[in-house]
Length: 175
Image (cartoon, rainbow, N blue to C red; front, side):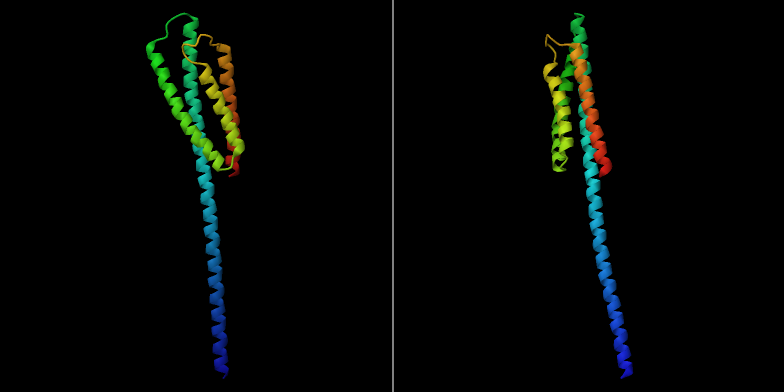
């Protein structure tokens, strides 16, 4: 009788140990899955932010090309010489490139809204609006182009770009 109780006692202890081990393993694996999922979400968010930064920088790069060509055009008209047709063609290519960049920037703005980054969205929107303002008011064959105003807008665009990237890098560091 004592042997049966000892066997029963040992089997209960082994069963409880196995049950505790099984539950612990299940709980730990669940925690790892949650942690991995959270890590993947953070990495995905960072990748999206990096893509948004690239798209914004591409717009600024193309804007600077456009600005330089318009600046060259203004200098040519002020000094009363014909601007070469090849440079005109290059400007039209840059305009097409700017339009393509704006399409990509629209996608970046959408991503910011999906990420619930409204302050970043507003900052990017201001940057975009100022570039659009310049494009709409500075183009070839316009007679009243002002060099100083163009320089002021260029500085403002660069300032808005810098503000956007400051805010984006702050959020990026928090993720």
